[in-house]
Image (cartoon, rainbow, N blue to C red; front, top):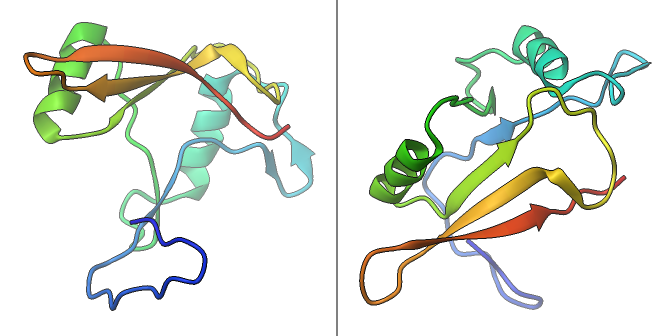
Length: 119
């Protein structure tokens, strides 16, 4: 849901859940220079899968075409794809991609966009 400036937030009766996909620092240790797979292991140690408010994003590995088809079937906006061995760098990076699903009149197409992250 998007609420613009000056707009009231409508009454919400659902449940909000925050999804964590990375951890850059923990207890004073800077983890940005570690590969994503190592940072993800740290994340999975500190964020429980059954936490009612904060959960780690599920990681899928495998055939990209099958993942896009599943995302399409689920009605998702897209997929964020990352290189498992990538270290964190601020700003735009070719190592992280957002695959946005668009439905023209027939079928679908995938639009790639670099992911911007504050550094």
